[in-house]
Length: 75
Image 1 (cartoon, rainbow, N blue to C red):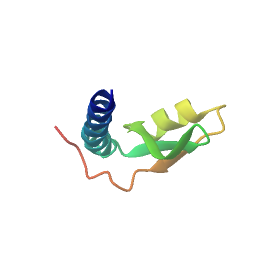
Image 2: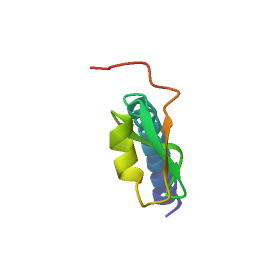
Image 3: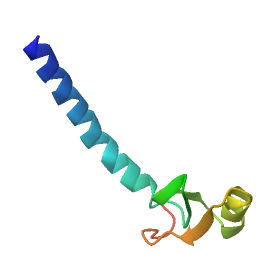
């Protein structure tokens, strides 16, 4: 039983390590982010234009901010 628990914990730990870099990379691809209670920090940086971000923020008590990690177009 202890071996199963230990193996599960190692698996979860490895999954978390792999997932973090993917999230960090995706947040650098777009210049604008939503921020607010449901999108804290820079967790929702999926907008190519300010207008697109503002449309998604409208009526939801969210704000748009420039993504400080955006470095131009990535392919």
